[in-house]
Image (tube, rainbow, N blue to C red; front, side, top):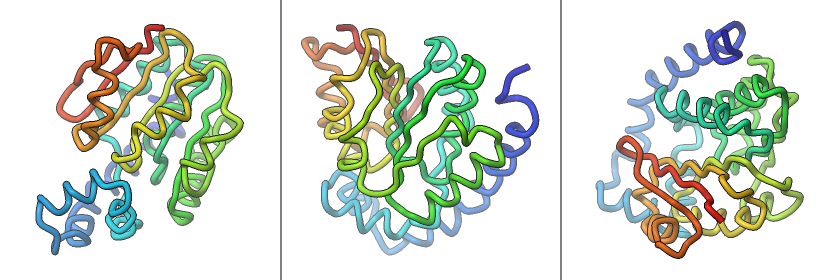
Length: 221
């Protein structure tokens, strides 16, 4: 039995994943006037992403159930005690990571969210899941909120915010990563600069695609 698979977290996650599935039509409607090419351009842009995510401010934008389970497993296997997350949304991925911290004996999870309404929803969900004591939500521009007071060392990083900013967020956390630290980047195909960086032979990382939309990297020095 784990925190992830027992009450109150397990039924809460079932409900949140169900709500995310129900919201898919509304999420699609919010960007229905954009072509696939335009959506991809906005995802890759360091300026236009604000308009895109503004349209999606009420959308859960949740990780998949499989990715959530992967996050929990990676954090547990690494014995993670310090985790940084870029992009909280409604807190589904955060719940998985916090559950791993609880089962590892405690720790600190710093997460970031640009939209105030989403940060509020995430706090409610983390409190309902019984893990709010492990999580610090930093509200606002992550390029500012994650530029100060980061823990040393960081054991695991999740990148799941604006894809164009993945290299910039990596710049902020890199000096705090311990050797062997894990970085999970969701939808990393929308950040080709990030992929080129972590896959480069001299980057200090070993990195590979995992499933269809996740890049899994390990800091090797």
